[in-house]
Image (cartoon, rainbow, N blue to C red; front, side):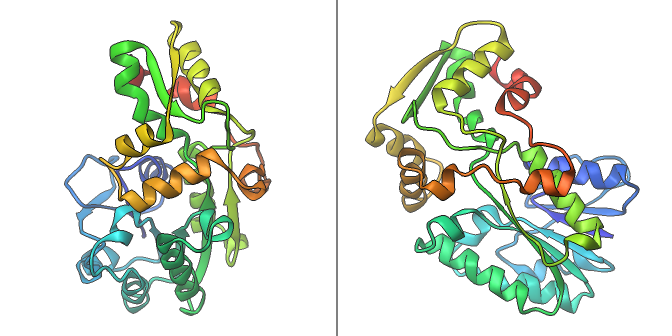
Length: 279
């Protein structure tokens, strides 16, 4: 059995589906009750309380670990999750980390994530680490304004990074969970090209078949909006990356191609598949 945390999100949902379609027994873990594919067991658990994962980990051979906001919860110790997995008989853990542990290693959240990577390496378990950059699904922040006003409002309109489709992250995660060849792999995951917010707006417009206007926000305007849904430190870190990406953050990685044998999907593909969110 394979346990997928964050199973109802943009990565966990397609990963759960792919594993189920591959004939695997899957336990989907999320904080709240949610619909899952037929044949998949669902367990509610809060990753900030690792002991609560014991029922989900019972009989599991592998774990996909996606921490999301749980990493930032007061008093959270995500290393305990790896301990619970090892104690429960899990043999392999695939950890969703972040490219930022390499490109901007000094932020508090990235220091914590790098420490978790080190804990996993030293655990004695089989492991693989995924380090994605920006997600194509972050464009869903614009869905409401596109639906209501046909506008994408974002800072740094002509500064791009090679954002990745979460479905490609899920596909790489599935490969790492199922294929021994990826044990000990550390994969940097990006899309196939650098794409700016202005070009993302154009791709959304093309998917909709109707015009979408781009409105450039100031950094302060963007920080105010982002701070409503994420810690201020994380908002500032994100804006630093979006406004002044480093050469490492602009690099298009070959790792998706290496693992999957195909190129990563472009943003236009993600926009076409998710166009209903913008209608």
